Length: 147
Image 1: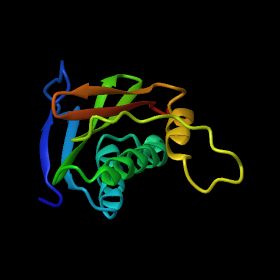
Image 2 (image 1 turned 180 degrees about the vertical axis):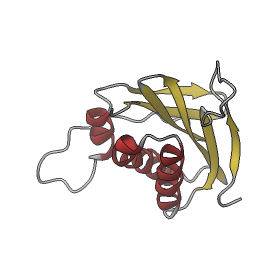
Image 3 (image 1 turned 60 degrees about the horizontal axis):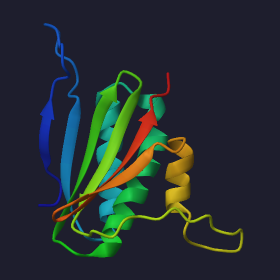
Image 4 (image 1 turned 135 degrees about the horizontal axis):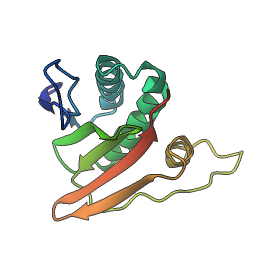
């Protein structure tokens, strides 16, 4: 499956006027081009929720998390999800099949890599983490919604 919306549902307390979904997921293959698909998916999801001012940061976070998962190459698909966790934050999460946890490395100015998680850390003000599961892990990042 290359680009399939798995689930979307209304946030708790939704009134008679339809609200945007509170969660959206997509399955992605372990390929470098999945980062581009992730960026488009997050951009479209947040735009649909009216969170245009948060799109740039959310797209960067999703791209970094998906790129890291794609490097593991351990399964045929990973899951990217975007979810409202509160009125002021969205959670971007990637579930993959590797139990190896991400490590935040402070890259020197001369290094050309190891900057992805530092970027996620900065954009989320340190509100990111990983949870090991029986068949892999979930890496999540909570982004404050720009108002």
